[in-house]
Image (tube, helix red, strand yellow):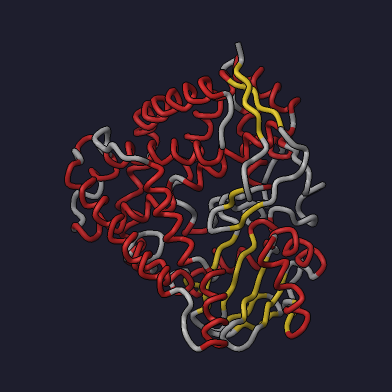
Length: 425
């Protein structure tokens, strides 16, 4: 693995890359990472410089060895009006308190309740697919996962149109995304003002709408029937608001992304799909778990992690400075040929082998102390829902053309995933 300085891309070389980085960045970043030892610096000037790393040694340093030096809150500051001081954005002791408060809610003792909610919502999705015979899988799975999350957080008293919440959530993310911020920065430099004033007004309106929804949900919920709210019973109203919005922000579309892309990979590999279905009939899920892991390797729901250095540091032979920005390119990390044999191929069997030493080569939930607190619940949902869907449906591709990945904060496909749903009679 590389221990030296990153390869610097600047000037005309950077300008030539901009169209590819804006239209289909993940394959381009992966190509550059493989060519330049998985350490890159995109240098557009003093305040527009970012280090992109995808080698496990640097990743381990950023997320574990000296994690305290690399803050996430500074780089997602645009989300602060939405997330407040919740667990996703907080640092230090405040984050530790929230983590300790919330951790009991995702313990295995609550999984039976969560499974009941998931089973109810799966039944609704199954009826939809049986009736229509076709679907936009990503959208409908996202709606289902949001309904499950709302039941988990508030019990069975929440009755919402998930389409509305998802639409508002996505519009907020469109304004706060890193790409939008960078484009706005350069346009302000050119024309002297923001070109997104109308969008920013809409953002504030959407934010107020979500806050009102959360207040109503909390007010109407029975905390004794909600593991989440029960374990937040000593929190203030503001702390509850922040935590709920953080869970909505990070708690449904990540799992929906993982489930959608796993179905896509099963559709692309009929023999693997048959093997999973045969295993499920024997009431086993070991191979299915490998399939889920391999799918999240190729299509990690969160494709990048952003950090800012609080002070100067040494990463191998690389001297870094305070204030510098770092992006962990999870997609390229998961396709690093120095760690993964035939990295572009879908091979679930690779997860049947001992994964010792791969902790910082495979990080679909992050790693270190800031690993996603919802990992046990997300895995349980995936392992519970997939067998139900495979019992009723088989999946096949409607096109052999590879889908283009849209790398928002959460990975989705540009357009519909090319999947046909066939009911098993």
